[in-house]
Image (cartoon, rainbow, N blue to C red; front, side, top):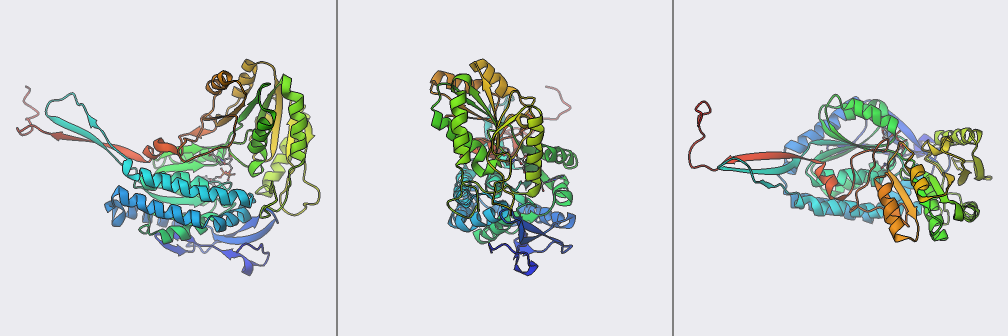
Length: 501
Ligand code: NAD
């Protein structure tokens, strides 16, 4: 399953999962997935087209309205999610290895993250029977008015390649807990993990059609899914340009939308910060997952008093990172996911040096790693935020470092961005930590830590980082719609509407 192959017959073969059955795309079309560590194809998946999207949404629509699923109690739905949680955690090693082979992310990280994905399903399984309506103190006599929360309908969940198991769980978990049915579209860059996950869904005992997994390209598969009239909600994670297509597509079905997009998040390091702790934050925020993280803290602002020491240690630490095979447990940073991504990063670095940035370390391909899409941990010293690397989401191991003097100036620099996903604050002054956490414009603020996540804590941004929140209790309510029920409690029949009293 994991060995890369150039011979088509040796490729791991995956199938779509629609209506409780594994199947090919109607056209028979397939595409190969490349292992970023070798640059060679290793797996093959069906390229779903409009007809397959139609089949998947049709199956999800039937499962929503007919048969076992709508008749099930919320507690039973929760138990099915608990079962799925256990299967995911039990198979974390296999799923993690497949995700690593498909995306280049470190095996240590994909295994741990997948095991933790089980907790997301467990969290939402527990919430399934805690969705409540309200009784309203209505301003009319003899009326009992209450609200219920109903499932919203068929949910289209669209994910990018960088954390398929995790990013699908933050959508599938709340959607199923609230009684919806789902069609997940995996990324064409890494289709295998979710098609492998579909095998666990099959074992978990969900009624057919409740959870469908398809793979295909943005055009036609993503477009057909997000514009399909049978879809009531689109939960999208990806880049801002794709998100603009998605929002336009939903003009066709008026689906409600959540958008988890990229970022250009700021890490503020104050003079009074613990130096090693702040370095760990900057490194986790930029070189963890080879920087291919939406919450990458890729603008690092360092106060003047600590700046030079910070840079010196940062360069030492970056140069000590072990780059290599992501399946090797001793590797600290794997390759980028695609060749195109590496080309784009190289070009932004070139434009940035032309705008006055200095390459303090890295900036190129690591010597001796000629196969695969490897790139060095890179630190750019930037004079200002006219430098392209401070504006463009790199989605790679490239951080831009800038110096600031006062707290106010640091916050001003951090807030000078179109994005609003995350921020980090490193300081030993509690009052400053709270002041800055309040002043920075971001959906998530980490103080003296970075890149920590939990099913219990809301996740999401604003501006060019999108809208809506994933994880936490409120996210589940986004997968419900409210119904108001009016009951006339008078002993008299309803009055004649044409007789005024
Ligand atoms: P992408 O936007 O290219 O693709 C994301 C998904 O959208 C893929 O499944 C793709 O097939 C699909 N798609 C493409 N065109 C479509 C269309 N017209 N209609 C519907 N779907 C379509 O993103 P990517 O390059 O795979 O991933 C990187 C991006 O994802 C980065 O910008 C990153 O910041 C973002 N991201 C955000 C978060 C977050 O939670 N905020 C998390 C991870 C990644």
